[in-house]
Length: 519
Image (cartoon, rainbow, N blue to C red; front, side, top):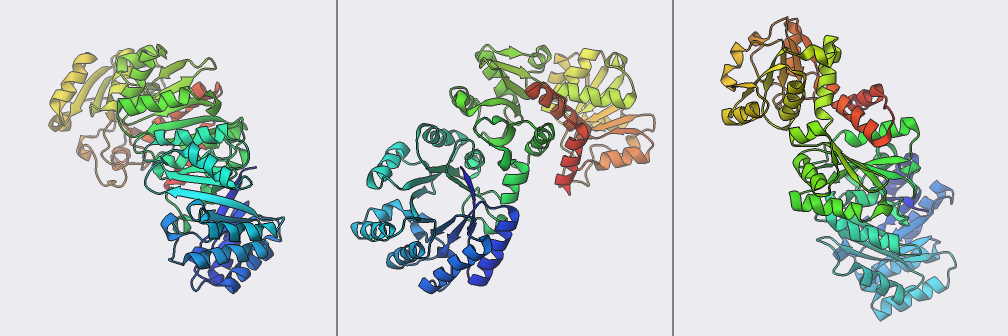
């Protein structure tokens, strides 16, 4: 059993009542009473707080009482003697668990007091915790064994800061290799996934806040995010893992849409945000860590900025399969791990763009031959779209602020090119914006004057936030057909879902999920 515990970090009893009520309404499976947040802390206040928790939960939910030392993340500077007295009182008041810092438990006096009161109770269990708010523990395995040597009946709680996602794997290894109850996860953005898959790896507890304001540690998710976005109730040891590899990754819509479609299909699969910072070296280390731990059961990845080329290089080095056009593009956005551990790499961006174009025009890809196309931009998105259109035989002209970059891309795919200043003279039946101009929050920007848009054009903007950019609004006003970036984003995600699962996802669910996130 991995409990989803919600900390009650209130300053007074009235606040605590409100937080307890909110936590229960959100689906908390355990409450952690953070008494170090309380003002004017004393024994009577702790008794009242425990009584409130018991009354509200009708004895059904386990309760942890914590009075955290300020050196280990406590909210207030309460003296050690008071903190220990609070834990002793919590045992006597019937708390299911008390959490004491292992460093403090090393004191003979503290140890004797805690052990003596626990001997009086057949109900309360001891959690011995250690936190590192700066980095990894020097030797997490040694620390784990030291805690159990000191108190074999204790639940070790080891929480450290992951400064890179590759720091998370020793937490995974400890959970996988240990027996008995233990709590192990990482703080910080890079450590987010350890909180989410704690249940899969049978960590005794993972923590979620009521809302962002009441979070008690860096990287703590809300209980709503756990249960709705990451499908916490459906996670078990057999859950297959997927994710988006990116830097940054916090803004990504991919977890929301893929998890919604997994839920729609009733699949035991989970999609995670994977913050992989650094370059090829760090990317390679991450995937090596994944592939050497088959028991994690990662089956596939979406890959985006800045790792699309790194992913291609990695699969080449591992002698995996690379889709031919993805090889030509020089970047991939999808990795699939086969049941034999072999890697396959694909680029669904170009196919998504072509599908968006052909469905709007009501033609097949063969109908794109000799179509005059203007592409604005010469970055990664432009490269994928130019490669796809070039493969169909379209007549492409690339416009870019840095002319040399446009020239290099044009030479590679036998296209024309021009400086961005030439856009007012554009003559094309299909115009595609592959830049970030007009993306939220800069929604009042557009890559070309509205006077340049003609009613017989098709205007495609690959920006998907907002769903209707200023460019598309002006194109509609001019009477032109439009294609929004949301269509391309959904199409590439649909293709990825098919590669991940072998099944077709519901495009309406994807689009609805994205629009809800924009609200």
